Every structure is written in structure tokens, then in C-alpha cells.
Image (cartoon, rainbow, N blue to C red; front, side):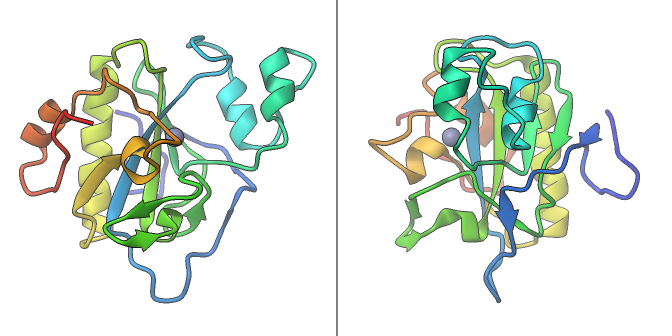
Length: 188
Ligand SMILES: [Zn+2]
């Protein structure tokens, strides 16, 4: 498992994203939001996601890139199919991953959540390496943020607008690994 010096969670590399800012004063991290992304959609290779989150997506390379290049979004972490994990935003800061969102009556989920993107789409099962890294990452984050007790999907905090991580994500398996966390059932 990779580890960048100076971090307590399992991260292989760090790439800086400009799409983040400070969390509001007093905000505590209580929630992890799982996403899925691949660029172009369905392609699990290359470094387009990395360039997208760092504001360097080349619009001429793919029609979809031209469509999304002006979006200013990021996530704290991106877990590739191999399990390799890239940190874009330190979890102490607010990454711009959830957009318009609400959970348990609290809107603006970016304020109080950590965003974890899994390389994938809504039509392909995620890899064993990704699940293993996701659990390790969540457990390490819990050590840093003791009130982090709940994991949901982007689909849960932005229903009707977002469907990721999609029907193949194994919520029931995750719930069995994280016995003292709140994890949704597989029904979305
Ligand atoms: Zn998402």
C-alpha cells in the first residue's frame, strides 16, 4: 500500500487541485461521499481525471472534454482501478465534489464531507483493489476525524441529479466491513 510521507492515510501520490477552499468555521467532517468517474466516460486509462480535477483538461482531445472543461470540481481522493490513490485536496479543506446536495436535513454536503472518487462508471463493477483501498482509506480518515461515522453515495445526497457510484457499488459488502459506521443498504 502506497503512502506519501507525512500523510496518515494510504495515498500514493498528491496532485494539487485549485477547486477547493476552507471549510466553514466549526465545520466537522462527519460524512464520506462516494463517487464514480471516468474520462472519457467508460475509459479506465490515461490521466484525464487527474487533469480535470487540476483544471488542465485539454478541450481538443475529446468532445466531452470540451463540454466539461469549465466545471470547477474536485474530490479529496481518486482511487484508480489498480487501487492507486491520488490525493487532490487535503481532507482538512473543502473539496468541491458534491454540488447542490443535502443529507439528514443539512445542505451543502461539501462543508462536512470527504469526497472519494472511484475510477469507474455506472455499468461496470468496481475492482477488488478499489474496495480494499476504500476501506483502508475510510478507516485511516476516521482516526483523523473521530466524528466521521457515515458513508453514502453521491446518489444519496443529490437524488434525481446524480446516480454515482451506480448500481454496481456493493453497499452491503461495505457495511459488513465497516461495522460501526452508518452505511446505506444496497437499495438506492
Ligand atoms: Zn459524483
